[in-house]
Amino acid sequence: MKNIRNFCIIAHIDHGKSTLADRLLEKTNTLNQREMQAQVLDDMELEREKGITIKSHAIQMAYTARDGGQYTLNLIDTPGHVDFSYEVSRAIASCEGALLVVDATQGIQAQTISNLYLAVGNDLEIIPVLNKIDMDSAMIDEVKDQVIDLIGCREEDILLASGKTGAGVEEVLEAIVTRIPAPKGDPEAPLQALIFDSVFNSFRGIIAYFRVFNGSIRKGEHVKFFNTGSEYDADEVGVLKLKMAPRDVIRTGDVGYICSGIKTSSDVKVGDTITSVAAPCREAIAGFEDVKPMVFAGVYPVEADRYEDLRASLEKLKLNDASLTFEPESSLALGFGFRCGFLGLLHMEIIQERLYREFDMDVITTVPNVSYRVTTTLGEELEVHNPSGLPEVTKIARIEEPYIEAQIITKAEFLGNVIKLCIDKRGTLKNQNYITQDRVEVNFDMPLSEIVFDFYDKLKSISKGYASFDYHRTGFQPSRLVKLDVLLNSEPVDALSSLIYADHAYDFGRKMCEKLKELIPRQQFDIAIQAAIGAKIIARETVKAVRKDVTAKCYGGDISRKRKLLEKQKKGKKRMRQIGNVEVPQSAFLAVLKMD
Image 1: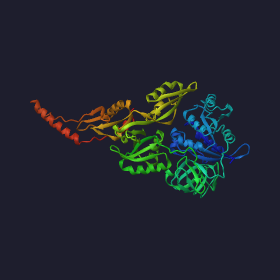
Image 2: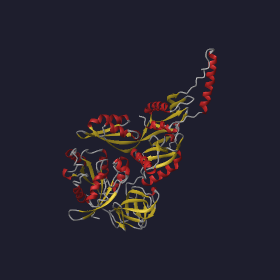
Image 3: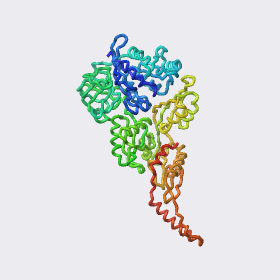
Image 4: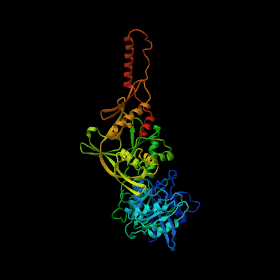
């Protein structure tokens, strides 16, 4: 055990985490030249294109230190985006140390800080590494000062490296061996292992990655998952090289995988504890929680007859990504589809993209919204994911919406614009502090629903791409929300209704009516487009009827003859309006999504 080192790499998106991991694998001869490719741990096509790690990976390296000792290094790679912070926290809990990678050209950014707090909270040994020192624009001394301010280390503790050229990688490996403590644990105690990730293999079922804290796990042992209560036989256990390498036993302090032919993704949850059925441990490893989706949206197939294909695709995706939830729903306008829950907007975008690439499914996504908590007048508490699930206005005592604490780091020159954006989105400023003379960190309390839409894009554009953004949930707060319905000829269109802050409802309703007036084709009768809150109409537009000139054949003569013909036409229009129905084109739904 004293020669094992478990560590992870934490960094902001695009600070060179995966490239540095490549150099570590090369230096330890884990991969030969033939197997090597750039960002070898990011094996999903999407990850390579977007340059972010979506799934966390683990790989074992063997390293001979300068003192001649043989060490086993377990690298547990972490996803880099705020949506996947729970997975990051479980990966961090499996380690004893972390490499804090900071881009020398950009300095410290929001994600670096939030992941660092997670690592410090788990008592990890932090090794600061400045990456990209070979770049002309590297500000080595400035960024060193930022790191010293942030974690209070000495200047000589900071390592300089370049993932691209491989400079300084040897020092990083030595620091891992000398500074990170060996794992602690009792090899004789009952088995206790933490699951930090799981992947789906179409031949072998779900494979769980774990780190053993106490005891050991043998091939063929009958094991049990603590929180879900399901029991399985360990058909195969082993360690993770680039491919899986089977072993007979995985001992305390080591990282490995288990195959036991599990077919249901709900049995294997990230953060759960594996223990032996024969001699179970008394308690699970702390920190397990069920991942709750934060953003909900309806996903509908573009062609209605592909509904069953969509269901099959979502079920397969769920095996790979347990944080996706979905349930069937139907809408008058869009037909049959699913209400899906996502961890955040990036997660939603990735799922959409994977549906298209891996399963060739074209889907329409409705306006994303968050889940609200409604207390009825009878004192019941309901969770509402969809405006149509809201009880009647007379039965609602109060509505609460989820709030977040947003942390934004930006250059000082953009501070005014950033604060204005956050206040427009109903944020309240909590504090601001200057990290350096021209970099400032601001914290806001904001409703989650305000950042779901286009907040991130706007933030990037007003700060010329410099601002970095991170958030975490703080709980629910009461809010003045109303349900805005859109009526066509007095019939509500369920797919266009939304829950919205009371003061923004009038403007939003008026814009929505104007937009629909442009998009709905004219009929033989007048179409009234109305926005309503409860029974009160707050905005109205009319699509005029296509009319035939029935008085054309009456020239001259008495006005009553013209009147008679017009009255006859009016009756026909009235009857037509009673039996006519209005088709809402697909473009109308998409335009409402893009409404600013």
